[in-house]
Image (tube, rainbow, N blue to C red; front, side, top):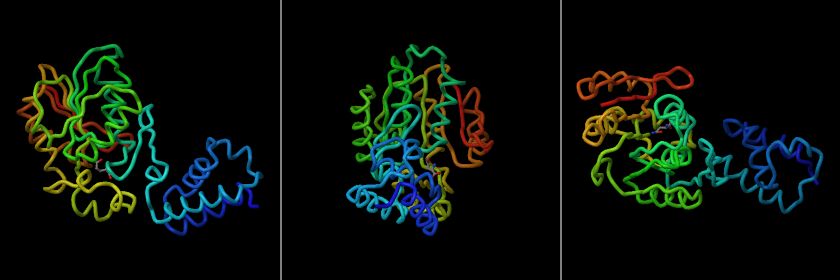
Length: 280
Ligand code: GLN
């Protein structure tokens, strides 16, 4: 029987030959998943043999990952801002940039009191990541999340039930079926241009829903719709926070300056301008 270390080494080499990014980490995470242990526990048992029945299951997962199916789809879950979300082809895999948007909101833009009561509208919930992470952090917030995709709403509802978090999900093409006003509107809308989708990694291009990725007018059309209508749905002193493609925040801040009291572009972790924050 082969040892954990031997299997990992072979898998890493195979993944590298297939261009899998993070070959080592993914091999470890997949083997840990099959062995039903934590990734770090593998390192304590490098010499242990892997039973043939486990190896069969592992090989099937390796085959899928080598075809560039995203790790999160294979594992069926993704970690996001302190919660574990179910994750599959019904919605965009939550990204670290979006997690950072939640961090910015919690650390800088929203009330520090976790018991605060305020209302939130999320446009384009996907897996439900932002809405559920905010509800998990602010249990008294009243959160409504919309998506145009019924499949995404189905997945977001599954996640809300699994996590026992009370968020209202509603089918709507942006603001179409939304009524009322909110203290915060947050969105990670599609913002890639056709050429950006074309040059994206297979994990993105072949597995994330295209409607969650691309938008007309070089990627900026949906953001324009959101920034154009959000003031009608914000309470006084309300805030709009959107994730954007690189360099889109400046364009939007200039175009919509007359509609907001304050509008600013905000950098991501690698100091690229990636978010627009606007208040009324
Ligand atoms: N962040 C996605 C990507 O980089 C693009 C679409 C989105 O998140 N809204 O592939």
